[in-house]
Length: 260
Image 1 (cartoon, helix red, strand yellow):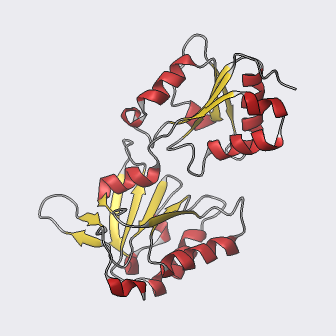
Image 2 (cartoon, rainbow, N blue to C red):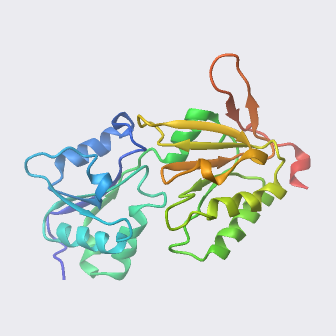
Image 3 (cartoon, one colour):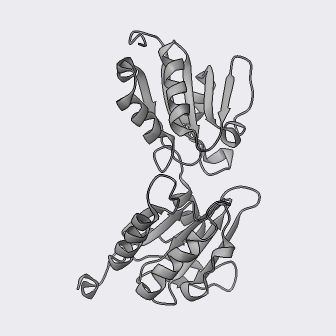
């Protein structure tokens, strides 16, 4: 059992979507104070090496083992930082750490544990496109690694029927090349064909690409593992401009007839 009186600590942070300027000062301070950095290999590679910092990289599907490792190190007196991309509380490591705390060593509950927010892909992509999240919205993770695909389909239908703007995380991967296409097929009968769909790839990185197309023309092949997809509501609007890409926004109010 770990020693609850240990001087160790554990901070779960989000590095933001890519550009170091989108990492918050609180997160930068936590990284500077860390003795140990734990996370998915490509994410911890974003943090510069320095004397006194030990990096512990692991595979993308080892979240619970990663969380237990972090908690064990913190219980032994280390200053541990667990890193995620984006925000650690959005489909990321904060929930995995708390799951490990709930079911693990009782001493872990007494550790100095904090979660620091980050800029998640959804808000970063929305800012690049305009203001598509200006009214009610939801986020759905299309990965079925931790939930059945039937539940994903149900949530897509209900979110579309409720007329939420929908942000789709993890739309495709090498193991799941078909699911974004299925999701778009579910949404098409429930949204106008002109509904704006934003494909945001590598937001804030050098390879950033933002495309907005009508739902009728949206194809899954536009997305890759670095893409976030935002599907507008029936109220989402497109403002065309002579210079620069169109602006996408969702009005802050909804007409009364939309509640019927």
